[in-house]
Picture 1 (cartoon, one colour):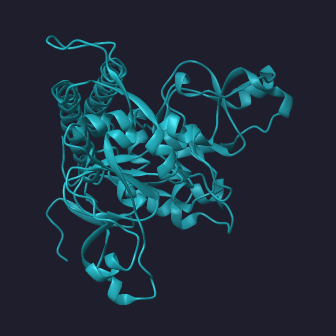
Picture 2 (tube, one colour):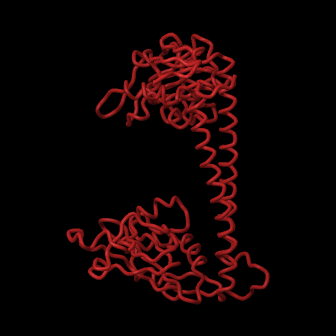
Length: 415
């Protein structure tokens, strides 16, 4: 393949002609971390361990919960200073071996025995290194050098053989600034989503208990059994030895389908289907559109509103609301009752809540469907806003990932 003008082929791939490829042996001095006496832990100075490195590419003292008390001589030997890079020396998974973080704080910290510290011997922008050393061109080399059947390990001799493509210090800083701006947007969206979720949680606690009422609604709420609010239907599984029962035109929901929603309210598709013959041959029942499907085993009380007719397996109890009940209101109400449902569970192999327990379960509800609808409308608007923000967050993360792929390989130049 012909190279574009201004680029060259190297051992780490195609990079700009004015970039260099530097082995870590020339770039960093390495040292393994401290293994202190077990009585030394839990007090003292910040102690960097594997979890912090896996979690963040840029570390500050506030991100480090661990503490260790060591003498001054040991502290000087194992001190982590601003700009030092710490590597995960041992991991349960190959994908995480050799992951790195750069320390961006002036507060003193030390590092543990499952960590290797790298101190720079050449000019290297610390913020840039936090991004660059987690890029695919570095991670591929790290994973290839990880060893071990039960745990993946990497040592100093392996790290010294890793090669990094490096632009000039000025370009490193420009790349770091661009990626930091992307991270700032991601963090601001994350914080906004967290705040909006807290607001929604507070609104649910007030609106779904009658503590807060909308203008035009009055009177005491009613105590109702769930069986008075909806027809509660169970699920079932056709025989798996009968191929004709499967891959038909009837959607068949399993808990995996609910998990895949990641908290979204509506379920419009299932990963598996059954045939009409399979439906007739099992205890599964058709759940009409705009009902609530709810997991009743293992993870209990996870809910979704189905936007198409479907069935479920036996790990569900499903609610078909009566005409006097707003389906969206019932959905929100059920999501607040998980602790109560779990308290009614039984089973020696796995916990499960049965139809009898659910049928008799009592809740407080507004007397009128119009008040139910008003409550559901407000909560639904909050969900819509959260969904839009989560979409923006996912897009921002995707854009940053693309920026890293382009900037850290020199495909896009900032200088």
